[in-house]
Amino acid sequence: MPGRFGTDGIRGEVGPALDAPLALSLGRAVGHRLGGPGRSVVIGRDTRRSGEMLTAALAAGLAATGTGAVDLGVVTTPCLVHASAGERYSAGIMVSASHNPAADNGLKVVVGGRKADEATEEELDRLIDAGAQIPSRANHELGRMGTDADALETYLHHLRDVAGDAFAGLRLGIDCANGSASGVAPELFRSMGAEVTVLFDAPNGTNINDGCGSTHPERLSETVAAAGLEVGLALDGDADRLIAVDERGALVDGDAVMGICALERLAAGTLRNNLLVATVMSNGGLERAVEQAGGRMVRTPVGDRHVFEAMERDDAVLGGEQSGHIIFRDRATTGDGLLTGIELVRSMRASGQPLSELAARIPRLPQVVINSAVRRRDEWRQDQQFVAAVERATTQMGERGRILVRPSGTELKIRIMVEGDDAGEIDRIARELATLAEARLN
Image: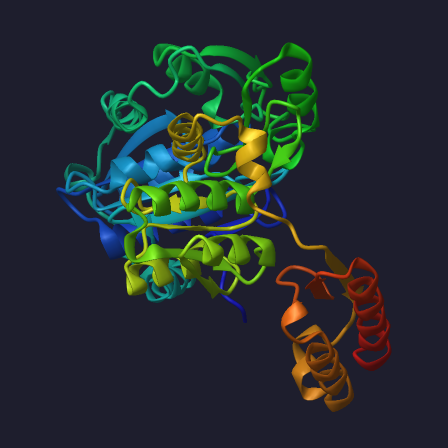
């Protein structure tokens, strides 16, 4: 039976896949494994209606093991991670499904300011199944529930320190996705001297990510262009991702943001080991731009955990994903949309150029992605005919492009990505491979 933890904790639709009993069991498991009498776990949530229910269940489960539960209320995931990084808390739990629809939610465990490792998640999964084996505490041993009034301001002070005076006089648009950043981001940027136009900052429990945020930045693009703003920042529901918009309203995705910041740091001599870490999905144009500027790029499998592990292994300070989940390891231990926005604006101000000109330095190679519905998605490497076709196409393209084949983690589909200089060629190759996959893997 597969474990409950995926690439970003436990996540699913509230009710069928995620409910209060499961949160209660996870709270007990975390308290037993990471907490105990005299120790506390900090909890945060985004703006989904289900967040209050799941937070209460987590707190009850923790208290039952003698562990204190400290509720931060509605905060961004990076704020929760920042609070959990110190010695005050033995762990943290974020209640959020990030960029997913409001009907979903998630439970992510962090330890020491970073996502719990796979071994810890496997142990927590086992404890959930063996919940009856976790001893109950007597009344005088139960954990207490409390709050931490300083956690948010400590986190915001950190962001202000990084930003310096970069936002003074900046005409900024921000899309809060009706999520965690709604109550903090506008005032944060105004306090730093920006003139802020705000979109989607009225969460009601059911409108998070609904036609807005980093997955739907269309309104922000229109607003930035129409109002003559200098930059737009689109966050997701828990504000750990960022997609930007330039002064003309054009999108600047995670690859472009990473490239802009990497080139600025290369020029300043602050990109440690001249290294950028990105996933296999990042566009080849990003790699070319970094290499031409004297840097190098290391690719990892998809997922921020893989990115962060490679950054630690190779001592890199910048890495991330095309989706806008970007890590500045000299500033934080997780992706942070607000921090990414700050670093992007710092790069703009350091260059003295508008965002459109900086983004133009990060070319985007033509790329085609086809999701083919196949029953045997995980067996594609065993089909010799399909593998041979992929190898032939790869050889045919040579250094002019690349091919990536990987099974979907959530659907019975195989993703075929072909990237190269010739748009017609990559479209033909992608379609041929997709047709063959459907014929061979069903």
